[in-house]
Image 1: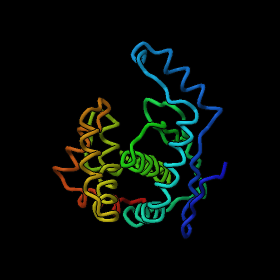
Image 2: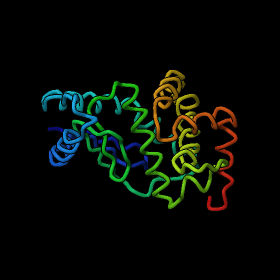
Image 3: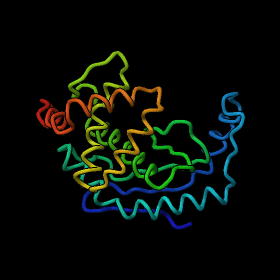
Length: 205
């Protein structure tokens, strides 16, 4: 299968592929959980079709988003390559390594991959997201994601000019118990530009 490789300017290569080795691990774990007993996984051909769609989608946004992340944050990626591992199911995407499920709709896939790349950008610069936020909360995930969401809002509005992405992200976060809803509430109250200004003025910049 042809690899999905995108490398604009000096930004990292993004390689999106189905991971046949990780897939049974995730699928087996999910099916062993009582709360997912009604989950019906896609067939492998269906997953591969979704992966091809993900590749095509990302190719349309790759350069704008990666350049936008660098411009917005003033940070640069130190890694020159990211594998995006797609598996049939994954209850929660994560960034080290990036593992994502196969059932996102088009908007949510781009939103979620951009979210995970924000985490990667900060890891590359050895910066703690919580240390450059203007909000502290007993839920560390909430504190961390104030900055993540401020960056995402700037991507959606200032870079892509697609406000529907923001609306969908906020709506989906309203059903999360991870602290994402509260983080969005802070961004909307304080203002994403003020939060990003805090990032660029942080001592380690």
